[in-house]
Length: 172
Image (cartoon, rainbow, N blue to C red; front, side, top):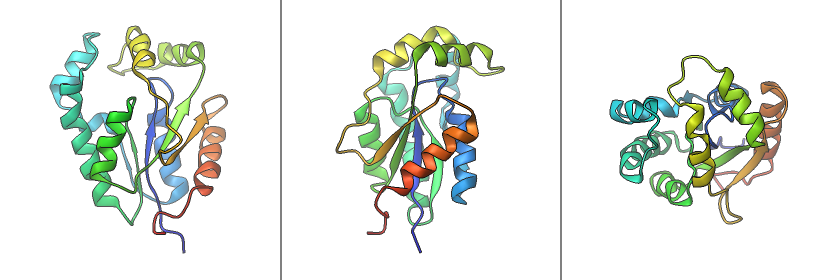
């Protein structure tokens, strides 16, 4: 039997991490954790005011997500987390070495359009440019896959499942 991965669904705001994450977790039969729930209130207030987070704001958030991922090692799980920089992913891997990434990618215009239609989210569209400026895509030496966000949620989830199936078993 294949050991389930602990998956971080990553990408800039508006790529669908909160939509795809639970669908992916359901397909894999593992729990889902919403990365935004790990943010301290000060981070949420800062982003809601249109102020990008700096690394000092992100470290405690990443550590909390890393601790969750570590607890799920060998049992699987899916968590959403922007993980835009290599250093952020390195920090997550330091806490949970077997974690893999599903990088949701897409055209900026499509992502901006999706962001402009979402209701009740604290991240304003105005911060999208800073997200793209910060983004360091997955490197060849990082365990993970890039998945295009074109199409509907089920189609994107299917692409993610198929791509994850090609990765080595985390127990090996």
